[in-house]
Amino acid sequence: MLHSVFIALTLALHPTVHVTYAEDETKVEVSFAVENVPSNLKPGAKVDLKRIDARSVTGSGQVAVTTTVIAQSLVVDSVDVTDKPKSPEEAVKVGLRVTKKQAAMIEKLKALRITVRESDSAGNFKTSKKPVPLMLELSK
Image (cartoon, rainbow, N blue to C red; front, side, top):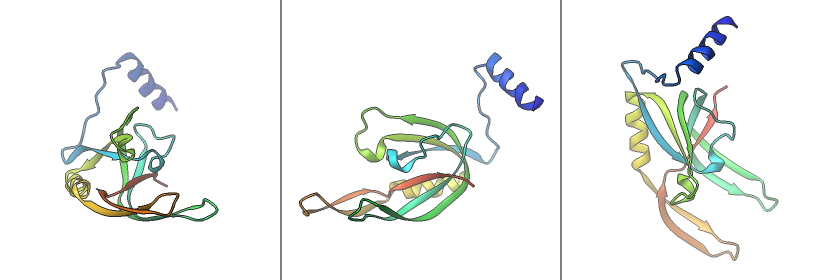
């Protein structure tokens, strides 16, 4: 308890404290849709990065999501919510503290484009190329 009070006082007295990275760590910035980020996400939280493989909505409005874990227990460095993003998938930018190996893997994943087939309310289908959808979940 005393240790956490000391840290809080140190941060309050020295607001220019910068995050230092281990020698093999770096920061990578990843964009997400608002619904793919926990609403209570804050810097310092530990999260799991997941790729969304499939998302479907039932007639009753239930959303089913199939995911694959990309990396676990990543530390959130920054969270930036954009007011007017270019696309819904770029609404939240999250800085993650990762190893250099993880950063390379995440950068490759961000560069990939997938073909997405979506339907509108009239039942018409539209096919387009989009970035691989990613999501964050708080680590357990």
